Image (cartoon, rainbow, N blue to C red; front, side, top):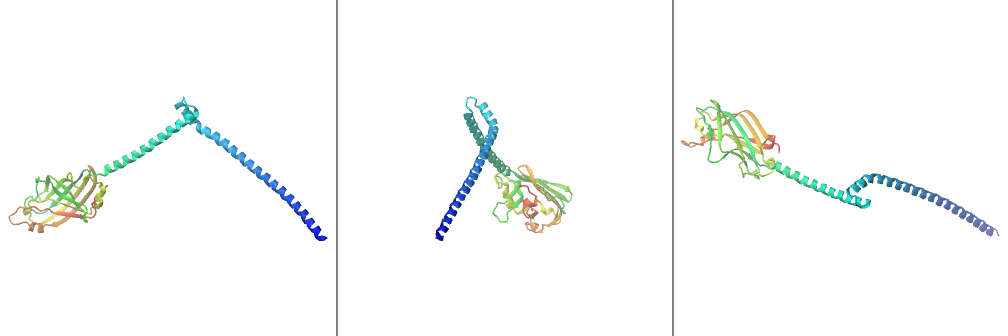
Length: 282
């Protein structure tokens, strides 16, 4: 019966194939075991090497721990040293925080406006029969002669005032208004940070003619203007202009009632942020 022989040969073939597979599996398993053994040996070697290197790195700390804590065993001494180092790290961190806080306080202190002054020099000329300006004048209260303005009206005007006004004759037809003006104690922006000065966008200043009736002509010529600002005693911005700038004061003189003694204040205005115009350092 041929089909019985066929099954018999198939059976032999399967047995042979099974035997081959078993051998192959054993071979592969052996190779895998060898690979694992080799990997474990490498890992053990690395552990030993790392352990030796760790001991080398740890040696200085171990020596230090034994010197600092001679009555403790090595493990306890190392633990005590670690706590001491952690404590030192915490102190350093707190120190940095305090330093940062102190730095912020110093910055705020540095930027706080305590005093704000300006030295003003205005040289002017015209035609007069005798000096229309005072050699010196001390009004009942300090008077402003320079002002920073905020066109949005959000901030108060900065009024630079003086309790005494000085003028001098340069020649027969030229006078010089030269005075130190300051923000008075208690007035804005004293106590504020310098950043607030960025908001102002107009600067105006003037000088005083106490006897304008002595003018032979209402035309005055501004020859030179020097403004030097001092913030907390340090020069921080300045403006220098060389004229001439002619100014007609007919309107102001015309408002003086007959027979009355009144003064006028020829005024100049600079448009733009004063901190920019003056190259002011904030």
